[in-house]
Amino acid sequence: MFIKMKNKNIHICFCINDEYVRHTLSTISSIIENSSLTYDLRFYIISDYISKENKNKIELLNKQKKYFNIQIIEIDEKYNPEIDLWKYGQYILYRLSIPEIISAEKIIYLDSDMIVLWNIEELWEVDLGNNILGIVEQEKPKNFPWDTKYFNSWLLVINSQLWKDNNIKGKVLDFLKNEKHYWWPDQDALNIVIQKNHLFLDASWNVLHFNVKNKVNIFHFAWLKPWRFISLNPYNMSYYESLKKIETLNQREKVLYTWNKFLVFIPLSVKSFIHNTCYTKLYYFKEYILNHK
Image 1 (tube, rainbow, N blue to C red):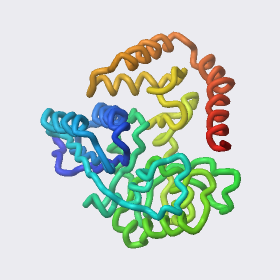
Image 2: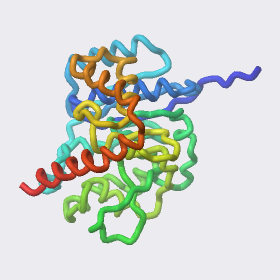
Image 3: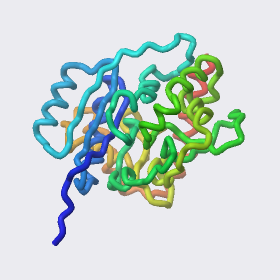
Image 4: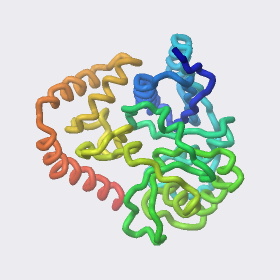
């Protein structure tokens, strides 16, 4: 029998603030759970601050397992104050520095509000060719002026050398300094700066809506977070199951976990109807209020 030896690493990066460490650990747990461990997993957390408590927690995890490692990278980058980041913190711009900070030919960037439900090795093994990014297509903002397909920046497979050779970080920051964004700051800028040199990945790698009929490799809690809302999303359970494997649930999380166990008995069609008629409208109403103060 031929056994494939582990002699390679998968490099996976997150850019977060300290409050998101818990959710990042849930994402990491889901990756580990669905990996065949053909590769060693190398996780990187880029932040301007991680508390001592969370550092100790991550250090303990690293001591327990040998097939993965979580490295915290604290940076102190200052950006032009004229850059409008809307409701987001500056940590969304930290992803622009990933190829400079991490020494690897290819790096997967993930948002921390994702649950990985399939072997991430399949994503890692996608050949980027001469493309700077592997990305997932998304419906573009209505006021986006460029006549091109639009992608989101929530999942990026980065060709590090081409990113640096093409000065993507500098071009994005220059755009944000001189131009307005249309909905999402760095995402709009990346779409304008990298209009052609990208490879569209299968949509299953970044699914935003729970009522899709196609395969879901990664579910992204882009709208209603499982730790904030008592929503009807069946993927909430995956978040809590992953978190339980790596953390002890607090009292609020235990309540939400019990709620999501109950949701198993509600038909998907009913959950989808309620979600679309109530939850989504409430979410967008909240966003409208926040942005029109």
